[in-house]
Amino acid sequence: MNDRRRQRLAGDMLQSLEDILSREVSDERLQRVHVTRVKLSRDGSHATLFYEATGTEEQQLETVEAMESARGFLRSQLALRVRMKGTPALSLVFDSSGEQGDRTLGIIRELNSD
Image 1 (cartoon, helix red, strand yellow):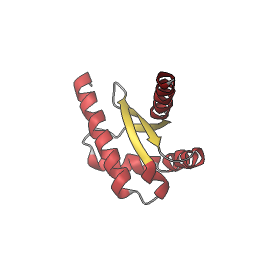
Image 2: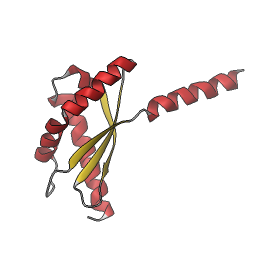
Image 3: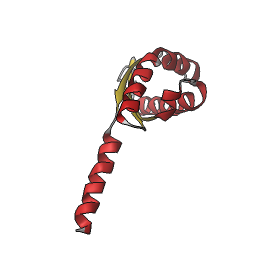
């Protein structure tokens, strides 16, 4: 699979996952999830989903568990929505980079105000 096609499919998957999580999922723990990136393997057989969740640390841990249990559902919904030869296996990665970035910006602001 060429790079352009892989990037397009990853974008389609990202958009579909956001739609699935906002409209199709009944588990309220998954309402706090935002998929930040989808990385598709060269052959398209594997996709890594990077996601973040709002809430307390305990709520985030519950969200990680909920995402793991919803993995099969997400894959089946992707199969229905994204046109591919085969639906890739999904790996889920909790992405805390946004949270870390917010903390870093807060520290920088604090230092600049002193």
